Image (cartoon, rainbow, N blue to C red; front, side):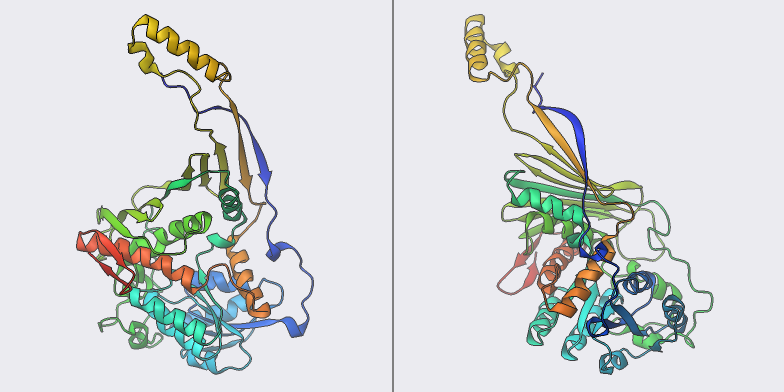
Length: 436
């Protein structure tokens, strides 16, 4: 029997201090207030709006949505008669608005982000940053050309839990990291994007043609509007909706800021055969220069979300918002069982030398397990939005800019390319494109 890597004693638990978003509720001078407009008040947008207006020194001025019902929702959330419109250009022309929250479907991200930057508006853009590989480089160019702030909305980089994991890696406590994995599973219609349809939805209260944008022109279809993640024309499937979160967190922890070299994928559409054209199980292996990442999402079984970072110094695991660090020393704490296959004399000589060379082996070295958790009521979405608004106010860099967001989006596009083309997706840095 192989000896363990070290016996673990009772775990120590540490409650982490939140970042600046929770530090103070003090009034903010009018001169420091940030005024924003929001484009898209749907499932993600309405949550971002609720969170944003609860931050100190942040005010919503206007909302844009192509569905009139969501314009009314924006007024209900803010509790005041803010300006509402179907034309987002009106928000970009509004001199009272400092920045924009863009919570539209994926196929609208590129145009809105570029238009915001060209209008000298900073912009918070929901994940994944892009709908196609080439779009990201255009968005980065607009960000830099206009000296704008772009924050991509995958909240892991603002989490105190992920920040602690990154600190452990940066200090070398985990040793050399060569493998990471992220896992997630759902098992309900809502989690599989079968959202209820607004009962009043019609071409009279929804600008359907504008919503389609660059997507193929089809007749009005309420399911496509409300459940757009189910179709490649508007969304990016499981990869762009959920794997993107797993990858963002891992990239942040281990310090990756580049696309993978290759991606290999498998999966299928097994359960949710409702007309969608994206898989409900997607498993991907990503190869980076010094790291392999395995990511898996299923919409068919509820499984706790887990992220694991593995190094020769131990294991980091984030499960349900709690980080556990289990150190390992990578040493033999007992003689190899193979010595039992040697003749008696050789075996005894080996055992005597092993005991002399490993004085600690008799009682396996204790390793302290430490758990880190965020305080009760903590929200990394609140932190992420505050990081954005604070950057708008101070011009400090955000934690998830367009370059970082683009690299994660490229990985998701490679995952989709590998799955749909049934091939190994290779990143060609010279042409900034996927081959395979």
